[in-house]
Image (cartoon, rainbow, N blue to C red; front, side, top):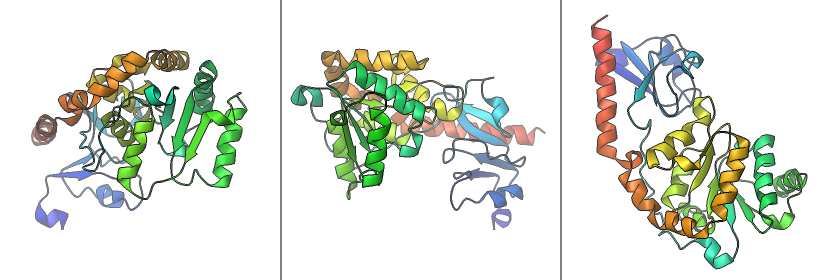
Length: 293
């Protein structure tokens, strides 16, 4: 059907995820084949011509060797965000009501490697009154709760510093949980993507650690496009310092929270029209290169 329809540019949005259609791309069904967005790595296919990214997530010369595809870098960000229509209003800073700082992560728990837990424990050790709020499906099970508590307590974190929760039945309830977080912590080396953008939309600044691969530089792309490079750490020591310093400045946190939605709305991360124009120009460039061969 793809060949009969005469598709010029065929775009893969799944990569090596469940129910992907990579076998179809392996047959080279279209003159130009592109992978984008749904899978943060190479397809490994010689028949996949391009991968769409940006220069923050994949700086020229840093990551090119990891891909069979040629990287096509969009001028600003590699993805665009539309906030959930049921997102509640941003509440005032939680710390102002609770009397303590709450860090948080609603990312897939598989991203919380032993090194992430060790680093986050260092933050909690620096601020003994702080709480870490972890939320993801099935975390509330006795087995997972015990594992998380054990892993953090190994580094001296008190059980009272941990808040652990599973999924909410409604998405609006999930988004409301961000109003209980003052600072979000981005996991590494596999950063959050939509999770980070949801946190930002709910007024929560996100501390991220830059790495040397796409999955570990998504946070760099997001914070750079948002105009908050001060939230990007170059190493784990700096990551801890940024989180602790930010936690110690409640006034700055309150200002960031109050202005984050407008900052998001004004940024390339949510400029749908400009992003679409950039994407269209990318496709035109790919087709032009094909015609000139």
